[in-house]
Length: 313
Image (cartoon, rainbow, N blue to C red):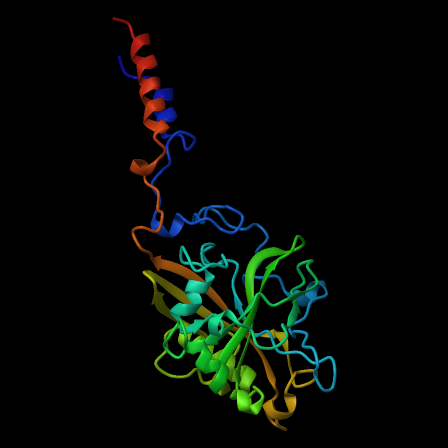
């Protein structure tokens, strides 16, 4: 007599047997949700984030001690909430955000020490103005100590925040990128340094062999490339969008040095990054049916025993 259908359904149930998953799907996001291709944050609108200005937020940060007071720095890069959720976890392990940063040449601050006051941003998610999560600097080819050189010699860097408030929880990462002068020059921003800082970052994150031509960017310009670190390979698509951030020098910090009569400090473009993990280490924690809890085969054996014992002789 054939075994009943319920027996095979029971054995294949996710409550009894963890089904095989690829390594990129094996991660959990910050809230413990699986990064399965069938799972997606329900609150992520196109193009992968909620527009901060639609709920009292701003595309400019708040900076203390500016002259005149009240100036901020442009938020000009967004990592889309539609990226792999493992990438959006603020950690170095499991292919997380900090590992992703290192993959394209940026790392945490020199010896973990931050120089200067934190900036604040309001992402329109219900959290109001919050301090930057961290400042990330160009590492000059050395993820351990290279950011010490950037702190002294200047270069590309960015601050970032995550859109995770209870009103608009997209988990998108908002970044304020710029290119700064050496410490001896007070870390002033170079001419056109907010737009150039954004495009320097995009050139690296999409692994371009040339600098992104800032003057040629239009709405919809796109670049795609791959970067790798610590066994993880990321594919990033960068999409330039116009109309979210203001095209202005007004209220932008360092606007005297970053603009002139034909170039605004902020050109009004943002770049939205959609990031996918395309390869990961075999030891990344991917589950298969052979790696399930030891009680699973015991339950399966018990069900098999019950089924066989109920069959007619």
